[in-house]
Image (cartoon, each protein chain N blue to C red):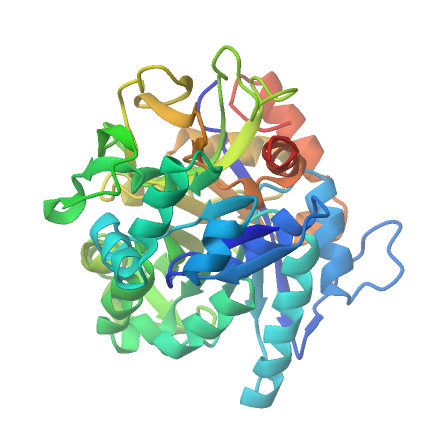
Length: 198
Length: 253
């Protein structure tokens, strides 16, 4: 079973529909036991960093994620769900993140923001998420991003004004800055790649 | 590659059905939104926009079901506009499966609505739709309502600056002078708006030839929205993208 963490952020039904295509049973929940026992946990997220973190903490989501990662159980963050896995976000005055990945999230240096639309991902060596998808396009909507590589991880990159981390895979933690659930066949393939690793 | 320029077909819907001529080959039912959304998705649309032209509240509730059915099966971003007046309207559409909403008249009548929506759901869900025409305002472009028939007493560039400061993810700029003429986008309007805002700009109105799309991108549009040229098969989305690709623009093929 795949649990989609419900903390009031993100288009949960869209995420659920896309993960259901893998054939694995999917639930939307913030129940700690369901989240702990699931084969994979999806952390969605849209909106501002600080607001997302507050909502996450309010439903006990920070502990859910920390406990799963400590136990080596797979977690995938999507969009702001990627960002809050890092230590720090600098959006709107700044806020602390869950901190299972080292680094900070800062505004992209681009003339036009948000970064909205289809952009390509240059997949890191040894990637499982992007198997068969190196150089493929995915749908992005964001203004903030991680700019530095995560040590001891598979780092994948995209360019918009500057290079930023569009995906990272380290142990049980996977995260993507784009929306696989809105990225057509490429997104479905990526979700299926992740589901196969569960 | 860099960020691809987006090509977005726009469908008018009412009472849960696509209305106003869509004449596509291989179409069993020209009014079924799911079927059309799938066809456009397969044809390479980068996003889809539904414009709800329902006359009544009852009809709007069937639009929600239509959005839900479409989002069940089409995995590209879906924007819904038309008749949105409150945060609750936005909430209902997002829950049904829309990714973004576009607002127009309601924001002109009550600009606070913009920040109410963006504070709750984030700037990225909000597309500010601006119906503008040439007029006697300082920039030479004025905002209109009622499909371009009435002036709103607002300068288009002043309005766009005000609205984006309140929290808008994108601007959908519709030229009411060019709309339906098929004589090309309003290049001067696109150029002026581009110089005054940092958010992505979707240009609409006037597409008639393939070259029109390139000119609008040169003027600073990040995405291009069109309706009739796609619905009536003047050319396909793929034709537009192939043309742009050959000219050296970044598109998703």
